[in-house]
Image (cartoon, rainbow, N blue to C red; front, side, top):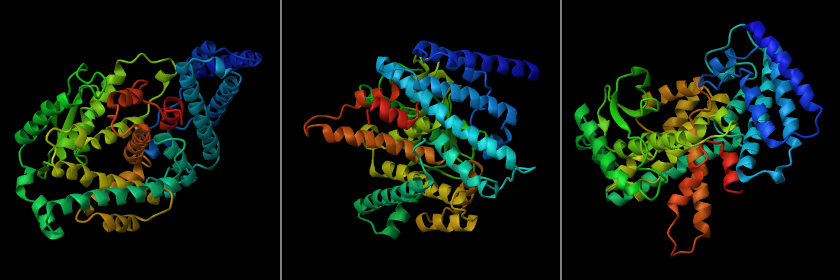
Length: 438
């Protein structure tokens, strides 16, 4: 198999030399050739663990071959007359350019890494890894978007912490209780499920109640396959309140050793099921994708969409109370704190102790979650940022559209959501430029 790959690479490079003699390549030829040749490079997909990503780096010979192929197609793109492209082709052009440039950044890093890599990859975090900061900058671009920088993301995290605190404070003040009485009230036993059957019933009831509210505001929301709801039994996922399995069309809620907060039902269902992960993934599954779109997937888009729909709990949630919204913000502040902590741990060389102190400044009584999340961020750098970054991008588009509407005009929810969903998962900067025209 190894010899076959080498023979193929020499054949491929020979084809590239022939193509390179042509001044231009028409779009259809580019699309077909690029899709085939990219697949034949055997580039590993992004893994969630930095250790896995570094261990999967290929030999210098193969990395050099990847670079030659990518440079060829980068040059071919530059020769294409974009004015002659349709709107759909321009989107694919932008996507191909995005991926080629980002892969060339990866190749440059891998060439340096192969000169410096240690015998064993340190397993305690990127700050102990040669070129750790450079790798973090790349992982941030790969997980989040090419426009994301550590400095900007850190400041974004701080601003989102303040946003979550203000929202939670407003709910507390609206209750008419002082801080001590409010905390005592929301932690009363009445706000917690203590058995699986009541949790299941809570989700099933919410599922039936919310769907009618979504029809006419989310495309095809009532026409896609149904979502199943089950108790999670996999202890590997015990650290999260719930998760979605797209192959089983099922979202699982976790109930292992602690009472289940009733305030989690609304936002978890919206995030994991409808109109969150289940809805978005099933909607995307019925799209006809181009050869270039089929090459790539973007978890940042998926997590961003699912976090965005949580923000709509008042607009579409059935009989939503301020305490349902509080449940969303109780988890949102954890996400927001993680954004800044992720940069601190992986880019600013924070110790675990400094990260815990930062957490304690903003979140009290959840140090067990903090320690778990610190370990997660050190092993899975940049991944936790996807939720907040993606939701914020969509909220910015929503705010920009709202600013253009006359006061009496209702927000065009269906058109807005269709615009975001109609091409499937894409990088946010590509969506911003090609779909929203910014």
